[in-house]
Image (tube, rainbow, N blue to C red; front, top):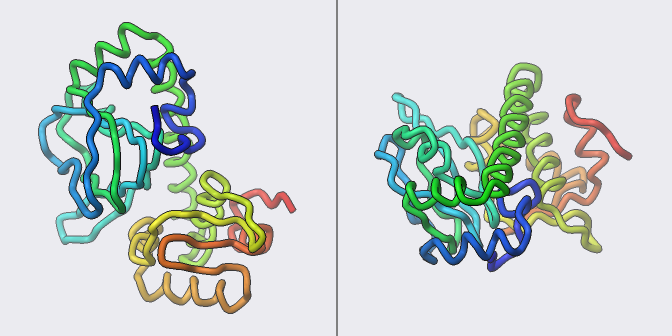
Length: 231
Protein backbone atom coordinates (compact mmCIF):
# COMPACT_ATOMS: atom_id res chain seq x y z
CA UNK A 1 0.00 0.00 0.00
CA UNK A 2 2.80 2.43 0.83
CA UNK A 3 4.91 4.16 -1.79
CA UNK A 4 7.67 4.10 0.85
CA UNK A 5 8.40 1.59 3.61
CA UNK A 6 6.23 2.31 6.67
CA UNK A 7 8.15 3.87 9.53
CA UNK A 8 8.48 1.67 12.64
CA UNK A 9 5.56 1.78 15.09
CA UNK A 10 3.30 3.39 12.49
CA UNK A 11 -0.27 2.31 11.84
CA UNK A 12 0.53 0.42 8.62
CA UNK A 13 3.60 -1.24 10.15
CA UNK A 14 1.21 -3.22 12.37
CA UNK A 15 -0.91 -4.46 9.45
CA UNK A 16 -0.28 -7.42 7.15
CA UNK A 17 -0.40 -7.02 3.34
CA UNK A 18 -4.03 -8.17 3.11
CA UNK A 19 -5.16 -5.52 5.58
CA UNK A 20 -3.18 -2.83 3.77
CA UNK A 21 -4.82 -3.82 0.48
CA UNK A 22 -8.22 -3.78 2.19
CA UNK A 23 -7.64 -0.15 3.19
CA UNK A 24 -6.21 0.86 -0.17
CA UNK A 25 -9.33 -0.39 -1.95
CA UNK A 26 -11.62 1.67 0.28
CA UNK A 27 -9.80 4.99 0.29
CA UNK A 28 -9.05 7.67 -2.28
CA UNK A 29 -5.39 8.13 -3.31
CA UNK A 30 -4.14 11.72 -3.26
CA UNK A 31 -0.85 13.60 -3.56
CA UNK A 32 -0.09 17.17 -2.49
CA UNK A 33 3.02 19.36 -2.91
CA UNK A 34 5.30 20.53 -0.12
CA UNK A 35 4.13 23.27 2.23
CA UNK A 36 0.44 22.45 1.83
CA UNK A 37 -1.93 22.43 4.81
CA UNK A 38 -3.70 19.07 5.05
CA UNK A 39 -5.74 19.87 8.16
CA UNK A 40 -6.52 23.04 10.11
CA UNK A 41 -6.75 23.22 13.89
CA UNK A 42 -10.36 23.77 14.93
CA UNK A 43 -11.91 22.50 11.70
CA UNK A 44 -14.79 20.01 12.00
CA UNK A 45 -13.93 16.37 11.45
CA UNK A 46 -14.41 15.17 7.90
CA UNK A 47 -11.52 12.94 6.82
CA UNK A 48 -8.70 10.62 7.90
CA UNK A 49 -5.38 10.33 6.06
CA UNK A 50 -3.04 7.34 5.88
CA UNK A 51 0.37 8.59 4.76
CA UNK A 52 2.10 6.67 1.97
CA UNK A 53 5.10 8.88 1.18
CA UNK A 54 6.65 12.10 2.43
CA UNK A 55 6.65 13.75 5.85
CA UNK A 56 4.26 16.13 7.58
CA UNK A 57 4.35 18.38 10.64
CA UNK A 58 1.66 18.28 13.30
CA UNK A 59 1.57 21.51 15.30
CA UNK A 60 -0.55 23.88 17.37
CA UNK A 61 -0.37 27.65 17.61
CA UNK A 62 -0.74 29.24 21.05
CA UNK A 63 -2.85 32.39 21.58
CA UNK A 64 0.34 34.50 21.58
CA UNK A 65 1.39 33.07 18.21
CA UNK A 66 3.99 30.55 19.34
CA UNK A 67 4.16 27.39 17.24
CA UNK A 68 4.46 24.13 19.17
CA UNK A 69 5.52 21.18 17.04
CA UNK A 70 3.69 18.15 18.42
CA UNK A 71 4.97 15.47 16.06
CA UNK A 72 6.48 14.53 12.74
CA UNK A 73 4.59 11.87 10.81
CA UNK A 74 5.80 9.79 7.88
CA UNK A 75 4.88 6.87 5.65
CA UNK A 76 2.53 4.45 7.37
CA UNK A 77 1.21 6.94 9.93
CA UNK A 78 -2.47 7.83 10.17
CA UNK A 79 -3.55 11.38 10.99
CA UNK A 80 -6.98 12.70 11.86
CA UNK A 81 -7.97 9.43 13.50
CA UNK A 82 -8.66 10.77 17.00
CA UNK A 83 -10.96 13.49 15.72
CA UNK A 84 -12.79 10.95 13.57
CA UNK A 85 -13.20 8.41 16.36
CA UNK A 86 -14.33 10.94 18.97
CA UNK A 87 -16.16 13.39 16.67
CA UNK A 88 -13.91 16.24 17.85
CA UNK A 89 -12.84 19.32 15.90
CA UNK A 90 -9.25 19.14 14.69
CA UNK A 91 -6.87 19.49 17.63
CA UNK A 92 -3.85 20.50 15.49
CA UNK A 93 -2.77 21.76 12.10
CA UNK A 94 -0.93 19.41 9.71
CA UNK A 95 1.20 20.60 6.80
CA UNK A 96 3.47 18.78 4.37
CA UNK A 97 7.25 19.08 4.67
CA UNK A 98 7.71 17.68 1.15
CA UNK A 99 5.52 16.21 -1.57
CA UNK A 100 3.23 13.84 0.28
CA UNK A 101 1.13 10.94 -0.93
CA UNK A 102 -1.70 9.48 1.12
CA UNK A 103 -4.96 7.57 1.08
CA UNK A 104 -7.92 9.68 2.17
CA UNK A 105 -11.05 8.39 3.93
CA UNK A 106 -14.21 10.12 5.01
CA UNK A 107 -14.52 9.56 8.73
CA UNK A 108 -17.49 7.22 8.23
CA UNK A 109 -15.49 5.18 5.70
CA UNK A 110 -12.60 4.87 8.12
CA UNK A 111 -14.86 3.87 11.00
CA UNK A 112 -16.46 1.24 8.76
CA UNK A 113 -13.00 -0.23 8.10
CA UNK A 114 -12.32 -0.37 11.86
CA UNK A 115 -15.64 -2.15 12.48
CA UNK A 116 -15.20 -4.58 9.59
CA UNK A 117 -11.59 -5.55 10.30
CA UNK A 118 -10.65 -5.97 13.99
CA UNK A 119 -6.98 -6.08 12.96
CA UNK A 120 -7.29 -2.49 11.68
CA UNK A 121 -8.70 -1.35 15.02
CA UNK A 122 -5.97 -3.21 16.92
CA UNK A 123 -3.26 -1.59 14.77
CA UNK A 124 -4.79 1.79 15.55
CA UNK A 125 -4.67 1.04 19.27
CA UNK A 126 -1.01 -0.01 19.06
CA UNK A 127 -0.11 3.21 17.27
CA UNK A 128 -1.98 5.24 19.90
CA UNK A 129 -0.13 3.42 22.69
CA UNK A 130 3.23 4.32 21.14
CA UNK A 131 2.19 7.94 20.76
CA UNK A 132 1.05 8.08 24.39
CA UNK A 133 4.38 6.65 25.53
CA UNK A 134 6.27 9.21 23.44
CA UNK A 135 4.14 12.06 24.83
CA UNK A 136 4.88 10.93 28.39
CA UNK A 137 8.60 10.79 27.63
CA UNK A 138 8.48 14.29 26.14
CA UNK A 139 6.88 15.67 29.30
CA UNK A 140 9.66 14.16 31.39
CA UNK A 141 12.27 15.67 29.07
CA UNK A 142 10.74 19.14 29.36
CA UNK A 143 10.80 18.90 33.16
CA UNK A 144 14.34 17.59 33.58
CA UNK A 145 16.53 18.68 30.63
CA UNK A 146 17.99 21.88 29.28
CA UNK A 147 17.58 22.81 25.60
CA UNK A 148 20.80 21.15 24.39
CA UNK A 149 19.86 17.92 26.13
CA UNK A 150 16.37 18.03 24.62
CA UNK A 151 17.86 18.57 21.17
CA UNK A 152 20.16 15.58 21.67
CA UNK A 153 17.24 13.45 22.86
CA UNK A 154 15.13 14.38 19.83
CA UNK A 155 17.92 13.65 17.34
CA UNK A 156 18.69 10.29 18.97
CA UNK A 157 14.99 9.38 19.03
CA UNK A 158 14.62 10.20 15.32
CA UNK A 159 17.76 8.16 14.57
CA UNK A 160 16.48 5.20 16.57
CA UNK A 161 13.08 5.23 14.87
CA UNK A 162 13.83 6.49 11.37
CA UNK A 163 17.59 6.15 10.91
CA UNK A 164 19.53 4.10 8.38
CA UNK A 165 23.08 2.91 9.02
CA UNK A 166 25.57 4.30 6.49
CA UNK A 167 29.35 4.54 6.23
CA UNK A 168 29.21 7.98 7.88
CA UNK A 169 26.88 6.96 10.70
CA UNK A 170 23.13 6.83 11.29
CA UNK A 171 21.42 8.92 8.61
CA UNK A 172 17.91 10.34 9.01
CA UNK A 173 16.46 11.50 5.70
CA UNK A 174 13.92 14.08 6.74
CA UNK A 175 13.56 17.77 5.76
CA UNK A 176 13.86 18.91 9.37
CA UNK A 177 14.83 22.53 10.00
CA UNK A 178 16.36 24.02 13.13
CA UNK A 179 13.13 25.97 13.59
CA UNK A 180 11.25 22.66 13.57
CA UNK A 181 13.59 21.39 16.28
CA UNK A 182 13.07 24.56 18.33
CA UNK A 183 9.30 24.24 18.00
CA UNK A 184 9.49 20.61 19.09
CA UNK A 185 11.79 20.95 22.10
CA UNK A 186 10.36 24.22 23.36
CA UNK A 187 13.57 26.21 23.01
CA UNK A 188 14.53 29.38 21.19
CA UNK A 189 15.96 29.12 17.70
CA UNK A 190 19.17 30.70 19.00
CA UNK A 191 19.59 28.06 21.72
CA UNK A 192 18.91 25.23 19.28
CA UNK A 193 21.36 26.70 16.75
CA UNK A 194 24.04 26.79 19.45
CA UNK A 195 23.37 23.18 20.44
CA UNK A 196 23.46 21.92 16.86
CA UNK A 197 26.65 23.88 16.17
CA UNK A 198 28.28 22.37 19.28
CA UNK A 199 27.38 18.84 18.16
CA UNK A 200 28.78 19.56 14.69
CA UNK A 201 32.00 20.99 16.12
CA UNK A 202 32.47 17.83 18.19
CA UNK A 203 32.14 15.79 15.00
CA UNK A 204 29.14 13.80 16.23
CA UNK A 205 26.58 15.41 13.92
CA UNK A 206 26.56 16.20 10.20
CA UNK A 207 23.68 18.30 8.89
CA UNK A 208 22.42 18.61 5.33
CA UNK A 209 19.49 20.12 3.49
CA UNK A 210 17.23 17.09 3.75
CA UNK A 211 19.04 14.83 6.17
CA UNK A 212 21.27 14.68 9.20
CA UNK A 213 23.82 12.05 10.18
CA UNK A 214 24.79 11.08 13.71
CA UNK A 215 28.35 9.83 13.49
CA UNK A 216 28.59 8.76 17.14
CA UNK A 217 25.12 7.84 18.46
CA UNK A 218 26.46 6.72 21.83
CA UNK A 219 28.18 10.05 22.41
CA UNK A 220 25.11 12.06 21.45
CA UNK A 221 22.96 9.78 23.60
CA UNK A 222 25.17 10.58 26.59
CA UNK A 223 24.07 14.23 26.41
CA UNK A 224 20.53 13.14 27.25
CA UNK A 225 20.40 11.70 30.79
CA UNK A 226 16.90 10.23 30.39
CA UNK A 227 17.85 8.00 27.44
CA UNK A 228 19.50 4.60 27.89
CA UNK A 229 23.05 4.41 26.65
CA UNK A 230 23.49 1.19 24.68
CA UNK A 231 27.11 1.65 23.77
